[in-house]
Image (cartoon, rainbow, N blue to C red; front, side):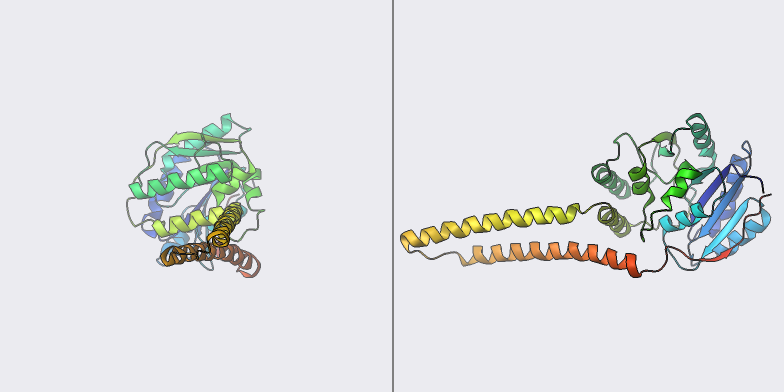
Length: 313
């Protein structure tokens, strides 16, 4: 088989209604370039997305469909596509048409002129998300800047191109709940942004609601650092020191004046505050323990049910 130049990996979930349009636009956008494959990974969609992918794989020789046995989420579905990709360069993008296929040429040309770069990401000229989602994205960026040492001039997005050698290295991390943006940042600082268009979502509703965004942010923090535990440890020592100082003050007062500790309300509030702090600390510790259990006993990162197979010559 001849070696492919590009593998385009798209995790798919409930996107069967517009999948054919997406494939047609990718075909038109990739005409100026040499051989490529399009890997559509169906993440156990509840609709007819897999049936649509099968039809497209039969109609277009460059389309390869992979159907997962159970739902694993966008990041793991993307890693499944990367692990099964054959191209010299791997492109990842979303399935909701917010990443215009017509912008693929910008990624490819920029990578061709910057061979030493490990990852080129599209930076949206104008994000077509709602204000609350944009606020969440901003907070996530700030957390990544702090925890992962991400350069402030770098914007991470899921519309990216990487040399296959680097992209495959992301799969070496056997973490149960991977997140590609933080993984890329932790592996390399050779990242470049290029401006690209970002379309409004035409149909359907994004799977990333507020709760999902908060959950993914928490997962990023837990996966990246033990900082929350260290913060609570430091806070615990500080509060213990303050409590000791207060106790010493009242003990000296009692010795000198024989006055008991007054203020039932303040006592109750103090006990409630420290009890709440302890419970919060135990909750964070439990989150880490839960992640450890998930890593040890959880299901495999993904399991392929059906693969239409590579059809390139």
